[in-house]
Length: 392
Image (cartoon, rainbow, N blue to C red; front, side, top):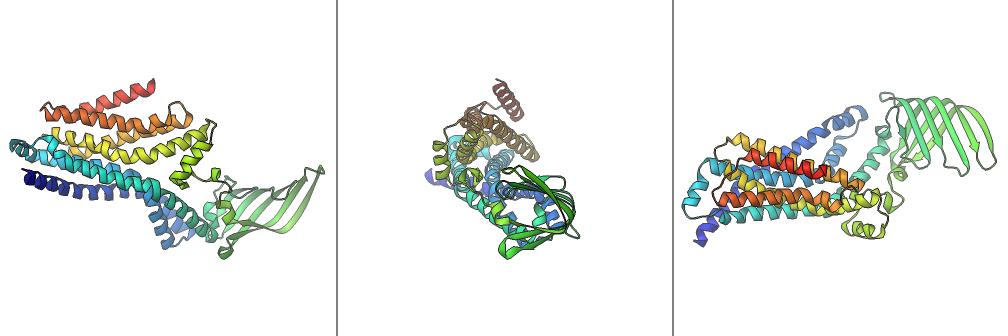
C-alpha cells in the first residue's frame, strides 16, 4: 500500500510541473507586456543598448516573480486536479480506497517548494535586484541622462538643484525653456532661466553638463540680503549623476533595498508611529506573507479542482484568474489601509492568507465527506466576507 501511495504521489507531483511552468511563463509574459511600452521607448527614443535593456529585465524579474510563483503554484494545483477530476481519475483513486487526505502530500510538497523559492526571493533576491537596478540606472543615465528628464515636470533628483524643462528635443538633444534653481552654494540661491540648452555627458566620470544659451541668472544672497541679475550667452552647469542616485542615509534608501536584518533593526529603532513606521512593518510582514500564500492558495485550489469535475477545462483557467485577482485585491487593500495605520500591517498582510487557507480547509473537509459546493458560490461568499470586513 505504501508503494502504491508513493507511485500515486509522484504521478500527481509530475502532473503539476507542466501547468506550473506554463503558468510561470504566462504570468511573466503578462508582467513584461506591462513594461513593453517603456522598454520600446528606451530603445527607440533614448538609444539605450539592447544589453542594458536585457539586464534591466533580468534584474526586474525577482520583483514580479515574488507574485508569479504563488499564482503559478495555485494554478498548477487547480488545473491538475481539475483535469484528473474531468478524466475520472479522482473517482478511480477513491474507488481504490485512496482518500483525499492521502493525495495531499504532493500538494503540500509543491506548496513548500513554492514557499522556499518565494522566501528566498523576498529575503535575498529582491534587495540584490533593487540595488543592481539602481547601479545599472546610474550607468545608463550617465550615457543617456535625458532618459530621466520629463517635460513640464520639476526634477529634484540632484541634491540642492531643481530642474524644469518645458520641452525635450530628443533628436537634437536640446532642451527648450529651461528653469533651474541652484542652492548648492551656502547662503546663495541662483535661479537660471534660458530659452535653450544642450546636454553633454561624461559616462566615465558619472557627470553630465548642461550648456545653456542666451539666458539670465538671478542670484539672491540670503545672508547679506542682496540680489542681482546677470545675462549670459553661454552658461555651463555640471551635475553629479552618481550623487543623484546614491542615498545619503539609510532612511532614504528604498525599503526593498534593505536586508531582513536592516528592516528589523530599522523597525526597532523607529519609535514614531508614522507612515514610515507602518511601511516598514508592511515590508517586513510581506517578506513572509507572500511565501505563505503558496501554501494557502494551494489549499483552496485542490478541493476546488476536485469539486468542479463537471466543468470544462477552460473553467479552471478562469477560476484560477478570479482567485488570483481576489487574493491580490485583498492584499492591495491591506497594503493601502496598512500604510495609513487604519488597520495593523500584520492584519493587512496576513488576512488574505487566513481567508484563503481557511476556505481551503473548509472545502477540503466538505470534499472528503462527499459534500460538494459550487466553486463560483465560494468565490462570491469570500468576496462578500472580505468586503464586509473592510467596511468595518
